[in-house]
Each structure stands twice: as C-alpha cells, then as structure tokens.
Image (cartoon, rainbow, N blue to C red; front, side, top):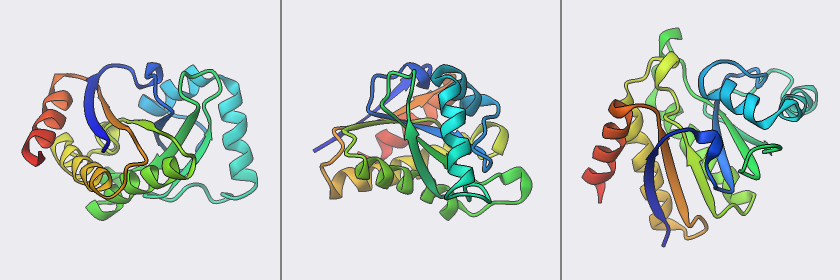
Amino acid sequence: MGRIDIAEGDITTQKVDAIVNAANSSLLGGGGVDGAIHRAAGPELLAACRELRASTLPEGLPPGDAVATPGFKLKAKWVVHTVGPNRRAGQTDPAVLRRCFANSLAVARGLRARSIAFPAIGAGVYGWDVTEVAAIAMDVALGHIAERDTLDRIRFVTFGAEATRAFEEALGQRR
C-alpha cells in the first residue's frame, strides 16, 4: 500500500517520477507554480506544451482535465499539467477541483509512475481556500491509495506554514 506525505518546499526539486503543474488553460506558462515549473524544466517544456496546443488541445486544457509532458531538466521524469477551477472567475464547483487531483493520478498511473508530487491546486491566485483544497486533495489521494497500489508515494508539496498546517490536518483527520 502506498503512502501519503507532506513536504513544505519547492515542487521543482522533488525526487519523484511525476510532479503536477497547477497550469492555466493555455499550457504556455504563467506565474506561481506554473512559472516555476516552466523555468526549472527549461524551454523544452514550453515547446512540448506548444505542440500539445497545436495537435490535441487547440482550445487549451479545460479545468479538471490533465495531460503529461516530459520533465526535461527537472528531477521528475514527467510533468502532469492540470487546470484548477478559478474561483475568482466564478468557477466554484468543488467537483472540478476534485477532478484535477483524480485525473492527475490517472495520468500518472498511465505513465506507470511510482511517485507523484502535487501542489495545492486552486489555492493562491485561483482563490480557493487552502483548507478546502487540502480536504479535497486528501480525500482523493486516500481513495486512490485504498483502491490501487500503483503509486508508492503521493506527496503534497506546500508553500508556507498555513498550507502545510491545512494539509497535515486534512491528512490527520482522515487516517
């Protein structure tokens, strides 16, 4: 059975098979986690995302969906991109946020990843309360671990004491 852990730090330095990018629909980089991942992975990541846009995702990646690219210069072999719902733009359905986590896990499973690291998708500029994000993320992760043993480790990489505390509390309440 896999394990879930929480680490405060930089998702781009995680030694896991896949990291999850809290991307925007364009897949062409941005701020926050998205910008940090693009900078750390190098220009090849942007080229791979442009190829996805030119081929299979001409309208961009819809909120809740997930797609993978190689990790290029990252320690992680893969980057799983997912677009969280933007609460500030009126996208308030928690089911879409839940799909971000579930679809990212499904993509990682398809890549045969054994370990994955998630940021707090939707928290920050997209306006979701980190406590709600943590509760949803932990519910999906624990459900995945209970049903399948394909991932040895699901890590949540947090930024700041408030987010770390929210994820630790969400995990503690569900064990």
